[in-house]
Amino acid sequence: MIVFNLSCDHDHLFEGWFESTAKFEAQQESRLLSCPVCGSAQVNKQLHAPYVNTSAGRTAPAQAVAVQPVERQQAVFHKAISRLVEHVIANTDDVGDAFPEEARKIYYSEAPERAIRGNATADEVTELREEGIDVVPVPIPKHRLGNPH
Image (cartoon, rainbow, N blue to C red):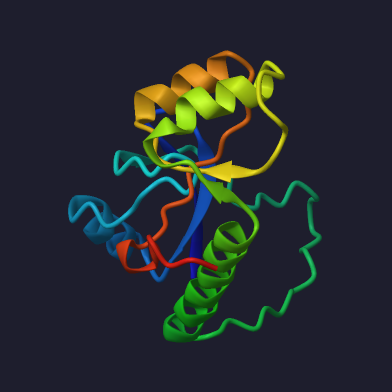
């Protein structure tokens, strides 16, 4: 496994774990990578520093790392995402396309404070953040939309 520092075109920084550089490049070319913050598919590798031994004549102690097969890692990741989606659905009010307006009303104390979810474009999310309103894009699968909890 190799860990790369990645960023999207909105300057969100995150890590990605890949079997090899070739696997990263293949996923990047196929646009299979996306930013976990905003969902952008324009993901690029950032500079990262490999371990450099600066002590003359001494070597760093070996570290053992148990690496799970990629399939297991993916299953754990998908389960965690599913739990996140379930938590969001169970603990928020769905305001649909009125999300940007309702988020502003709550932020400016014009509506009761509560956790909400809904639809917003990338531009609307950027505008909300510029106003100081904390929003996090969480992609909810279409088959989960409209299912009351």
